[in-house]
Length: 134
Image 1 (tube, rainbow, N blue to C red):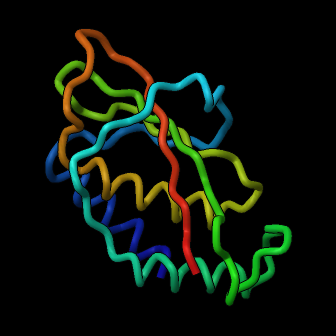
Image 2: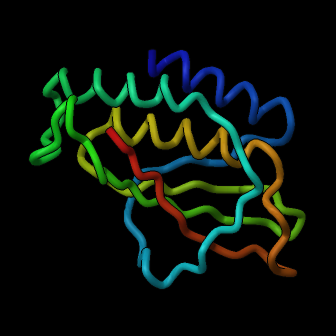
């Protein structure tokens, strides 16, 4: 399922603009200005189902998170926004769980498939987060 989500997200990103570079890492999350997004859409039910699959696989240590109780699981991300509103780069917070990081990257791609409202006259980094509710 994650493959389908990623393929769909990448295809949508490629169809409207050059796909942003995606990486996993860290940042000074608190120092980033909040990202102001237009309403985006992604299949929340599919994302929750994929998260449950990831948790049940037990390939990742996500602490006390279970497939039935993953409230407040949060993954931060940063985006580099060009003056025209195009997202040039996405950095997903490293959680030592590649499948979770890929899922969040796919969700972020969906959210930024349309240009982000321009916020500066030069490229700038902004931050936000994805929080899963069980």
